[in-house]
Image (tube, rainbow, N blue to C red; front, side):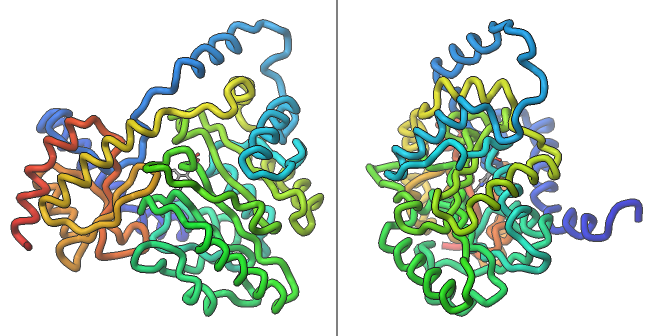
Length: 393
Ligand SMILES: Cc1ncc(COP(=O)(O)O)c(C=O)c1O
């Protein structure tokens, strides 16, 4: 075998997502792009606001010499300062600029965090359903992913978590608003979680870190609030990006913010700065850092996604599908109408509707619909959703 066995296994593991993507491409060639209802990818639909484009043009026109050479690995001082001010306001506690590291998206942030924290074989708890790439990130950094299911409403099941935390647990990874469920964890749910983490940290005589992956934080609906993590737990880290909130997924810009009192803060920050190099990122894209310095708190209008959520939820409810109405992000995670979610997704595919089976998120019996699509795609897909539902309801 020309490639590592592990990577070959991982390719197999992720193959049906790839297959879905490939089959979708073939279907679009066969039926025409507009006749395939592609809900498979979480690729942002909205355009970045004009303020972003203006900042980008300004930055691009600056011809100061040596603008494109190596730069500090952690990011430009002025960018870290702007982000630190923003996060201080968001979290309600003072975050100094040296507790911020600019990264290549949230994925880059998570990889740097795990590379820095994990000794070989140490465990990271993932709450299922979970973003499939988490598994690879943890493994890539020598860790062992441990899956713990969430409650039936997709909130954190703290009791289940209790029995999964061991002396070998290094971190718990949470994601709210959540991909794939759209769940936003309530403050009381998070308080229960951190109470458990304190208790277990004391028991094992070492901190259990809370890593909060927050790329969807600005995409929230119906006045829901995403509780700030830092005031709740000092051993916490935020990983986030502008990929979803500003539709900049291709530009790879995000950051890590560390709680200023996290245990071992200086070593952790030094670790991040080394690991951004080890992982080959070296630094986050310079151009985007300069742009983000000018538009730190800017976001696309989440109301546009809310309209799509409502259109989809109303349509599917009428067909008889069951789901928890998402409070944020741009995904819906309904129950599959048959036990075999992979088969169910195939049946939708016959109606030219592309979705992803829940098995890909560690939760069989469901499927994910990403509603980053035109309103028309949602309305035109309803006949297909209905036709499949009528077979089973
Ligand atoms: C939950 C979650 N975390 C992280 C990422 C990676 O985001 P980025 O593009 O900023 O690396 C994604 C992307 O889809 C995601 O859904």
